[in-house]
Length: 467
Ligand code: UD1
Ligand code: CA
Image (cartoon, rainbow, N blue to C red):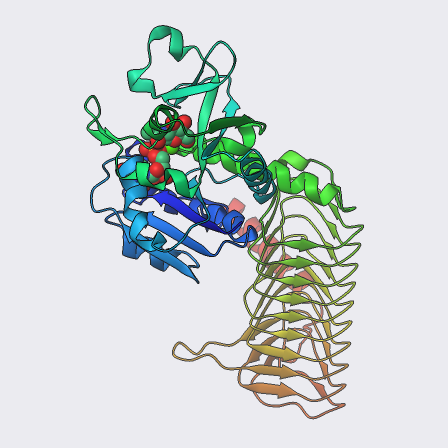
């Protein structure tokens, strides 16, 4: 059967108490609506229509909206009215219309396709997904007759005290066959709320002797609607858990799965071990057998196999070669490339730099706009002075260079292969290969100076006492 998906996303989302359209509120780095679209895409529908309101342009611009049509619902006059706005985009379509709410982000494509199969197999005109909740407040309640057949959906505002106690609720997911299409534009106005309720289509279809069925097979965690920031964060928490457990099923170990945030597009290699309070964001790729210690944040980066990242390290938009060791307290800023088996130790900041294989910067350095070759040893406190107050300049340090502690490189400057830089040097000129460069005041030792000074002050003290 051909499927068209309509996603309702034009509500104002007043309960979010936020100026941003509700469906653009993010779970991790993506708007809620993007998750709904992702699930819809997996069903390979012949078209996807998003019904949006006055924020249509903002929504269109904020999501990846390839091959998606947008229908405008100028005023939020209810879910029934919203669906009717999609009808012009469904002209000539005769399959099943799958209606989704833009504020139900955790639905799985597998659940939706199971639901569609049941809809087709049972030859229903309308099917809907229901689920049970501990607190049904604000959901539409599923009303069944004594034999268990679906009768209608009653919304919170219209529910009697007895109906309010019903814990089976409407998820907002519907499959509508072509026989029932014509009912969409006939949904009456609900006077109490001044809205057209899509849920009323159920009672209407039953009255028209169409076949309607509610499937109660998914968990609350998957179907929970998001109307408030608290519910948004609850959904994020559920997704966080879902992702952590998925990775644990693929041979990744989390010491504390509740405190590790793996964003949805992240990849992690087998055998990697991740300690607590770790954030792995964006499209980061982690290799096999890595160890990531507590408090690490990695954003849009690629980490090779066997890398160790010690506590409280940040890696942003960078590439780390295999078996490198980073941290604790290292800061790898965007556009950096750390070579394999390199070591970037505590309080080392790297920005837009290449660090060669097996090169070590173990303590307290700033390496910015630098190209550093292989096997370079960078002593504690070495700094590239890349900024002259106006422009950035680059430093090039070639293979096998040894850099003494507390050296500065006033860029632009280049250090030739195998050269040595004496500790405490300020390097302003290029250094030829294999040479030693020292730039500091020569040390002088004044012998017996301290002893003489002591004698002088003793004498003074004696003269004072005499007076
Ligand atoms: C709706 C259902 C309720 C169900 C719940 C599931 C109705 C009347 N109620 O209630 O039975 O249990 O979802 O989460 O359908 N929207 C529009 N235009 C509008 C109004 C809403 O596009 O004029 C969109 C919203 O952006 C949202 C979705 O429809 O994505 C649901 O709207 P919302 O106001 O959140 O409905 P609920 O009160 O949650
Ligand atoms: Ca809702």
